[in-house]
Amino acid sequence: MGRGWLIFLWTLIGTVIGQLLGQAAAGQVPALRFLNSFIPIGFSPTDINLGFMVLTLGIALKLTVGGAIGLVLSLWLALRNT
Image 1 (cartoon, helix red, strand yellow):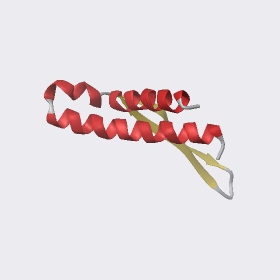
Image 2 (cartoon, one colour):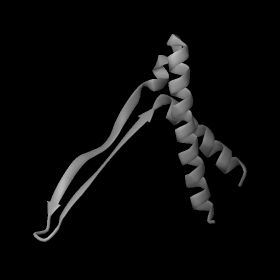
Image 3 (cartoon, one colour):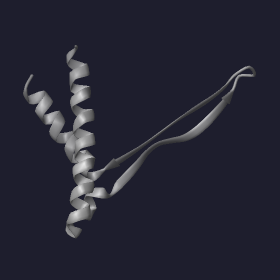
């Protein structure tokens, strides 16, 4: 597996774990509710009609503060070990 794919997997795993921990911490400690604040990234679904086929394209990401912290930590760990 290439180095780029390994870094991508680290960042994906770090983001997911960061969001999960952020949601858990925000549910338990009211002072940590800011970890669930998010920024919506992406664009709404768009239809492309080709006559014989209709394609629907769109992507929506919800990056929370906890996910961003997990992303930064996982990138730091992935790049530190190379």
